[in-house]
Image 1: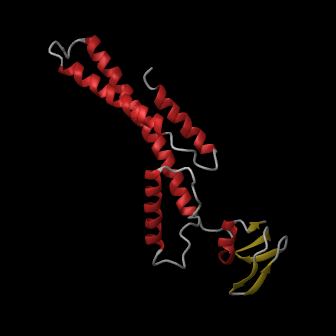
Image 2 (image 1 turned 135 degrees about the vertical axis):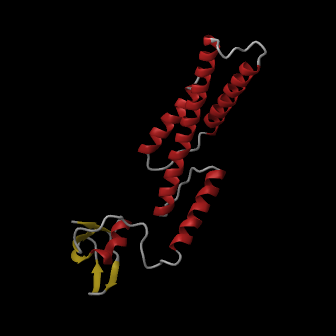
Length: 186
């Protein structure tokens, strides 16, 4: 039936959103959707090129419309699947995490995207571009140490961050440690 394969891709995209790691690329489903799109396009062109084709014939027009809409739906489903995967790869690149289930083309994309991020960050090594765009509510925050880090040098002195200890520190001094999961804001 038209669109069944594309619907499977949409279900896979929805499932992907709930997973921590990106699942393996559904190459067979993608090929099936592309094949269906080509078949629908060929059928539309064949119908329009027939010598007895009458554009005023409502039955033929309805048939072409259904095929065209099915083709557009397949394309949208395929693009949604690709967009979901690309967005997850982009997030992984910014967070500098590894995605193990990428195919060859996705690995190339990920490498190129990581290179782009490095180029963007290059001249701004002292600025954390991965941080939140919203300004903090407080300059100083209470934090609890979840994992021992050791000594951390700040403007206000040296802190020895041992597990289960608490500190009142400037947010900008510990923002990276918060993002990495060593500290937790109280």
